[in-house]
Length: 635
Image 1 (cartoon, helix red, strand yellow):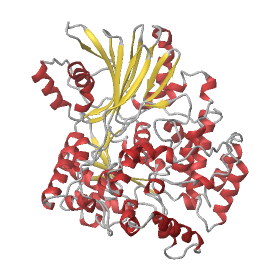
Image 2 (cartoon, rainbow, N blue to C red; image 1 turned 180 degrees about the horizontal axis):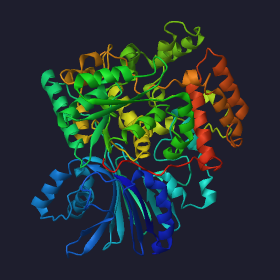
Image 3 (cartoon, rainbow, N blue to C red; image 1 turned 60 degrees about the vertical axis):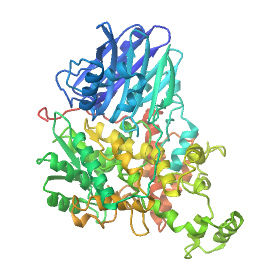
Image 4 (cartoon, one colour; image 1 turned 90 degrees about the vertical axis):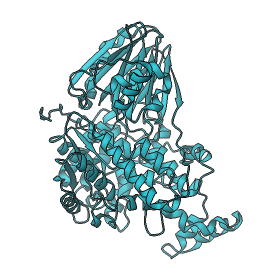
């Protein structure tokens, strides 16, 4: 686990940028406080911050690997973990006579590239972003993992191509005029979705290597291609008991390999079925497992009690952290700095606090991200079940019902059902976050009628046209909500605290099973994640199964009308974004929320996070104090 920064030059002038890149690496120190190293030649600079997890003594990067003549031919920088590295190492040794000088997973990746070529990415089971330099061919190859667990930003200009684990390190290498260039399309998408969809970022100059994508850099020029095309070979389920055993077996195996480390591994425990299942299975591998939960003092916004009950039931030591409103406000600017791009998910903040607490005890944690997307866990996935009667109606009749719904009084029973049933899925669903509708963006001065949320999903819907509606929604979420929000906050908030987070549900072997589930084994009219719940009956404590999903809930609705009102008003008033946003409209929105009864908290929060981001990365008016990583050396 680490932070990486690489530069491949177009004109053999890489050494001229070596000092600048070394300086920019300091901005990644939280991702790898254990070691800082680099390697330079005329064409490339490879720099690395290491967080030691596996093979603490030998797997130093950039790591060299020999070619056929025995001389060092390849150099690799790698962020992530390969969970099948032991099996892959044995295969390469058996089939090709590969030799290894370390016990770690980094050398296995570069060896796989030597013997399997670019197809090596299909053999990798894990989370990864890596860059390999071939000194003989004078070209680079790299990839990002299947689901986008590990980030990778990219900038290309006249000098060559730069890649980094965090955008801030690339911004430090850009001309200042390019740093101030906000991508207006990304801003409009952000206000709708609460995140910036890949491959864009909020800076026009910086893009991202997409999830499931590999790339080549030849003569300093970047060429990308997608290697992972998720498919859903949905079956009939067959023997239900055998299906549930298969789900439990693949999860048990995933947790086992995700526990591979030379350091202590803990687990986040939110009180729901996903994290409880991961913790229970991890406890079977490590009887001394530590679990961690965060909450607030306000009733209804804390899972501490139920998580503690779950911890007692599965027999693990449990550690909790309570966050106050003042702590919350104080931490937000620093959290936005760690994010690189604005993400308006309030759960980021408690996640940052619990990651900081966990890092005092462990170096690695497991978590339950991905279960909802793979196994059908969101309530919105049940919507097609309620709308089935509309599917057989002629288009004209559905359109008439939609017009009728507009004439019905707000709050009238059936109004929303008629409205949703009249809208095609392709227009109705674009992911789990829906903040501002197009007709609510009057405060956005740069709003363009040519920009729409449909731009993000149009090509995806063409790809999944043959699937049922529930599967199509899940497919959309793999490329929107999961990689845009869920995995960004998971990576950024844990790595901000030099803590490695592992997500056993987001394993390609788990996906291979989950993708075959019939719709009825994912969602029913009564529940979600049906097959997963059945598979975990003898793993998860009984009191968990019928609980309403909360995650890490945040009381911003109440706080923005009370304790956080003045704080929010100051952020709006101090912002220098008049060319982008109408501040008076934003203040009016804040006051309307305070008066009630309308709840505008998520909209206001989305705007506030962008204003803080702009103040930090564009205006450079806000400068959070960045702590130096400092953790117990015994972990």
